[in-house]
Image (cartoon, rainbow, N blue to C red; front, side, top):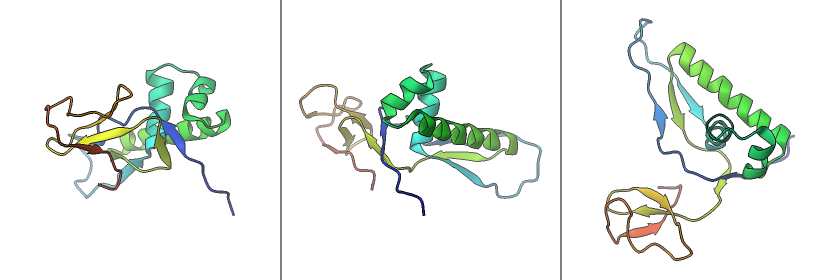
Length: 138
């Protein structure tokens, strides 16, 4: 029996929810979906996009360096599988917590984090005043 995973810190919510392949010459059957967990996305973003080494990235996510490396390897394997086999990638799930408060616009459904100590009074995208704290259970 393994012990429960502790939450991983995520500094940015992914700006997209996934990718779909196009084209292709293989059989036109229904393709599987590869689910990339939010912490796996964050590991790729920190290591490959932000160019953090694994020790720095582990500190940011508040996990050990070996745990970060396992998360990163799992993410790379999933991305490779999706690319080689032409599968759709969906980014969701995982045991995560954001490093600050997030909000959702009731009008345009944009999600954003607060940039100051004050609670936002309007959406930075559409200007609507209908702003609520973001909930993953939407």
